Image 1 (tube, rainbow, N blue to C red):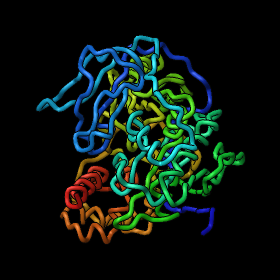
Image 2: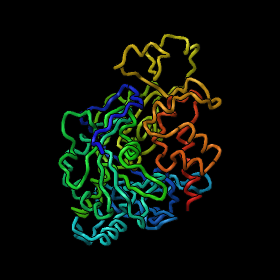
Image 3: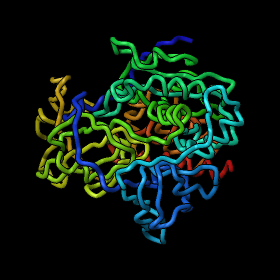
Length: 450
């Protein structure tokens, strides 16, 4: 099959505040957090207790359904608080950093030459399973299932996303170590998708034991789910694994240096920051560390992740476990009288509703205003324009709403997760929360198929 894929459908939302490659220094963070909500379908059961001393790599909690899936502390320090919400549901594990960054010592010299059984045991011990997401359903990989293939997206097309090559530059040795080890888990292939528009070679062009695929097109071309659909779709009864480049680096460091290190380069994106660029920090860092970079007027919405799929973190929140960017855009708490009737030269639109289409390269200071309210879901054909897959997205959404499992299967529920439908949220005339509907559909399938 061709190594080059040219996708036509999709949409690039042009927002001000692209991070670029400038390096930014921030004040050291005192607190870090693990947010159970970042891990889909995980019911957390605490391992560590409040006040307990932790090292980087110490297991903090595990999955109630599979105790082998454990999530580790990103830093050394003290477990300050297990924060609970309604019905005592755990919302966050807050860790006070001691600044020493002591690591758990692994009594192993595992390398890519280890056997499959040895690697599985190491992944169990070192809390590495959360870095591997399986399809279908987008859940943490089941250690008992071997994947058909493994997929890695080495570029990001989401709004205000950083250049992935820039944030993993210099990590080739760790990536190669991780790839060589992951090869032991599958009889299939390890596919890596890179940006076909770039004129310089990707970091992954130097990596062995992978198959490179080149994708051109607007967002969501960088979504691994879109890439799987075009390379080797997931069928009923099959399982594939997906990893981020940052996850590969974490696995490679542990294999090569026997240390759990979730430090990463994070993009500071959006018009809500005075300065945009790249920050070297640690997963789970407190948003307060970035407070000096934020604009105070108007009020900003702080998002862990991108504006389409990210989680609202707020000024007192924390960076998500999987996120490579922190985004700030103005809150849209206002009404605009007859806004639809104005020319809209300064309003981005995916259609020609406003005259802004005359400026195809202009970037806009977008806010969180819905510009309308939720209404009846009607067939407009807009979803099909932004989902570059051979499925009927609006029909799938309706099948989920009526909970028709057989119809959901026929319409491709095994191939998608909510991020693949994020643009549907944006373009939906009815203001329907499509991602929430798709996630509920996945929950239904998990319950029915378990």
